[in-house]
Length: 154
Image (cartoon, rainbow, N blue to C red; front, side):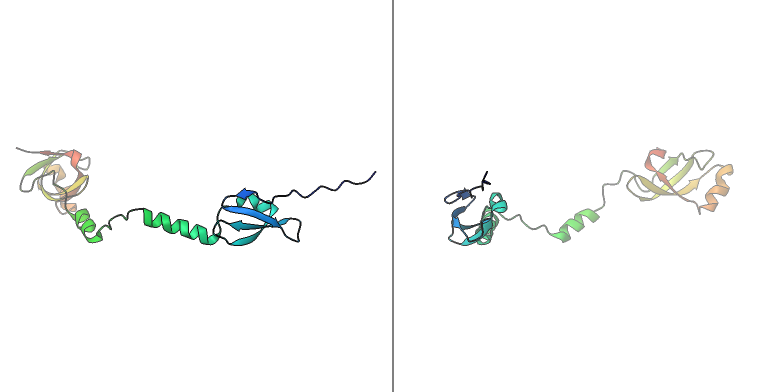
């Protein structure tokens, strides 16, 4: 019995993306393909499915996409920084006394606002109980607490 040899499939005229197969080369696994722009290249059988555009066509497509999209206006970094640095509206008032309830003291202390941060604030301790005087002195009569622990004295 004779061994049957597989015939090479004729791919001439087939389309793969923008490429059309023109004909075979001397090698059995390679074909000549022509792009719609006219450029020719040699393609192997295993790479036929990956054919879409030649490099020059792909570059033209990218350029079209770039020019088709409207450009976004550039952000001014300086004004962004200025807005970021802009202080937020304070929730606590200056020159007002606040009652501060903190775990570090035995009883609530009275303080005056020095500076306000995101969720906390620093206070100057104005009045405190005698039992808390030593603790207040050790912190130089200044304390940082969460705003939740503070109530305004009216």
